[in-house]
Image 1 (cartoon, rainbow over the protein chains, first blue to last red):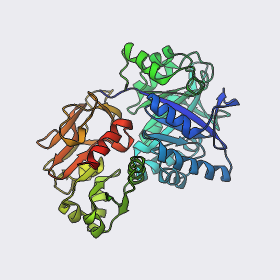
Image 2: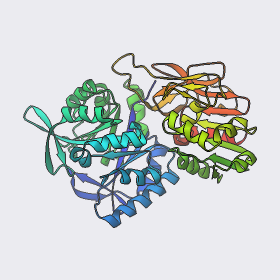
Image 3: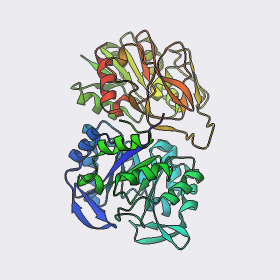
Image 4: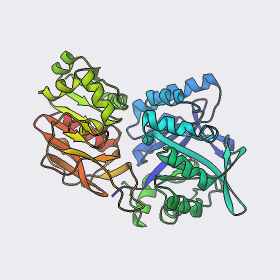
Length: 251
Length: 196
């Protein structure tokens, strides 16, 4: 049976790993390649590396980092951050990444999804969506959660799928950094609307939260950062727990 | 030992290159027919679309060359599908090393997502590639088309239906999954191929 996936996410700034609490106030969490290798050894199913820097020189630093990751890591990894056009995708896949994650650029230029799918295949194209719960609905945000995009989450996720996205990485800004669980109701609705895998992100604090994202939220994968970086949750123990709770995971 | 990777317009050549280097082998990445024919082992990777890839192989004379190789050859993912007779993807005539055709997954219920992407288990593993395997090992798949179980199948996986996860016929070996991305299990499978 296809396993549910556990995905540690590493935010990268100036070549080192950081994690934001509600997208600000970073804490240093170590060397990205070493951390990735440690997670892989512990049983991570995939890794996500997000470049949260912006300048042109730092892009080059990140590309060099992607090459070092590809040389060392023996599981699939996704890279994201600052991908605006096809040549960014070409550069990162060429450096050895398996998938790319696009976020604001997809909202601004939705045809970028089609271009990536056409040139490299849907399987490399992860569309990341940051959304916040407001009144009775969920709304998408640009630029790391700073600018409202004016699009409802479920409508945008369905459009991304129809344009050729291979997966949706949904981060609940409402839940991110709070460590009180994932946005399971929104996740479940995404699973019902979409025909592509959904990666849950934002809100993991305890192992029960992962179980709920899979069993209640019907997520295909769960992503987390700080609970792994600071050793609060070991992936191997988390997977044994999930297996005991009836979630099919790779052990 | 000389290991050659067939160089063509495929996506995962460098992933395979890195995986072999982690095992201490530096492969030659080449489209030169003489160098491929002279290698001890040949790996035929692949990520992409069947029709355009076959056109490329034919235009560069690689289609005949691959079929005529005598040393152990390992096809991976699209590489495996192209080693079959025919693919529904782009209605493509392929290399016909394995007498099997490649079909598109047809979802049977809402949860059946295509592509089949992620970690899934191998069953009924047979022969050299799968020595020293744990029981029901997990390997990493990304594909929308599959090869039905046939006489050459040496491992199966269940997704929507039981399908071929690996094939072997004489010196030709093939996997639908990506050993280069399948953690330590994948490394064992690559090592097994290198020591055939």
